[in-house]
Length: 344
Ligand SMILES: Cc1cc2nc3c(=O)[nH]c(=O)nc-3n(C[C@H](O)[C@H](O)[C@H](O)COP(=O)(O)OP(=O)(O)OC[C@H]3O[C@@H](n4cnc5c(N)ncnc54)[C@H](O)[C@@H]3O)c2cc1C
Image 1 (cartoon, rainbow, N blue to C red):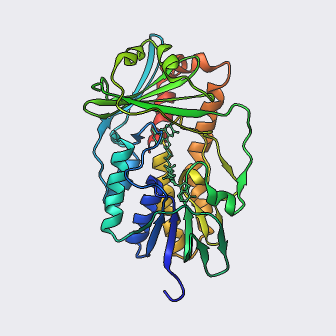
Image 2 (cartoon, rainbow, N blue to C red):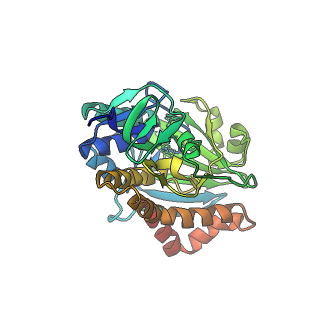
């Protein structure tokens, strides 16, 4: 490895960065993960691993504990549309982010991934190498999330419209889960995701406009208002704006993976599944010395997410919003078909 400190620098040790680091070690590359935060990293997330995410994690040797998720239930005042995942899709799992992080981190350490508690800033590259955070490497993956520095450094960030920006907030409650379906409660103001993550804990993630008032929004959902009297099991955490756009996903020796590569919305709860699929594709591309091939893989991995998720967000922001749950209930085959596509 003459002249190089490492084959691959992974900027960002979130779940996608750790999955990419594991993939890269399994492909025989040496890896350093640059991540400024220490400990089991938490993040505002609905924490639902869609069925398609679990075999990907298993292939990496990662099997975090959590609660089975067997489908999706759209709900609004007295009406609901339930779809149970088919046997072909399998089960999903509700997993606390700290638990997911611990499981991925332990596997990365076991495989010899090195860690550097640092933030990646300026990046320079030439035809043969990329330099960042004081290291020279063959490749760099930007896995640094929604507000990616790497994306800006390589000049592929596109300005996002300020109109209709959406944000997320989440909190956990010490309550026994009451369903094995991911419940999505549609109020006039927010979508509230209920995900069981432990036998005594549920997570509530709300998506909506900037400045969501968590307590007020919960109070506005009759089926969930009882949680206001339950014991919180975590502090409130937020994220956003969710929509992030990129003109391309690689430049030279730098590839963008996970939320850093562009994100539509959390409304379909599949950021992790997509991020793990992107990590696999990115490692395969650099292992073959063909980083440009990643662009096409990224497009095909994210196609449904870009099309269906954008469509659902547009409907959620339109006068159609109150009709979404009744329509899902009236058209179970269409609703089930969409859930299945996004689950895999
Ligand atoms: C409210 C909400 C609900 C969601 N619900 C779901 C769900 O139910 N299911 C699902 O699959 N997805 C869900 N998502 C999406 C999911 O959370 C993301 O897709 C996922 O976290 C992406 O992982 P990541 O590793 O790409 O980014 P992140 O998890 O954001 O990790 C990025 C890491 O990079 C680090 N970092 C930042 N800057 C730098 C830098 N300059 N140098 C080095 N490191 C840096 C950060 O510290 C962080 O650890 C939800 C998102 C939100 C906001």
